[in-house]
Length: 104
Image (cartoon, rainbow, N blue to C red):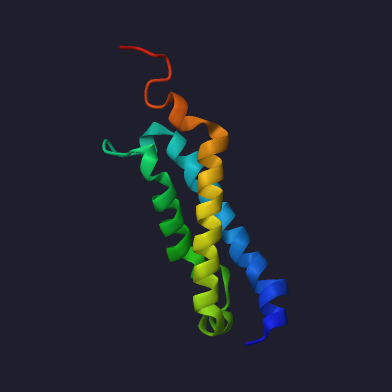
């Protein structure tokens, strides 16, 4: 394994991919028309991590994917988990959702 290529080129791509997917999913799901009737924000972290994981291959050449798949997937999942937790915490969404106006 080319450790220098991994650390300086591919790892930053994996981390950027994960962050972009988390933000995209968060912003998209804020719109009610993109959420199903059973959607729960408590499931966002697992959902976002899975989305980042299954789309990770799109950010890499076939050669890099074949050589570094395990490292890419591990780091995409780890990074997506961190960012999903941060987005939910920073937004405070779970503090006011689903009843932001306190209507009974």
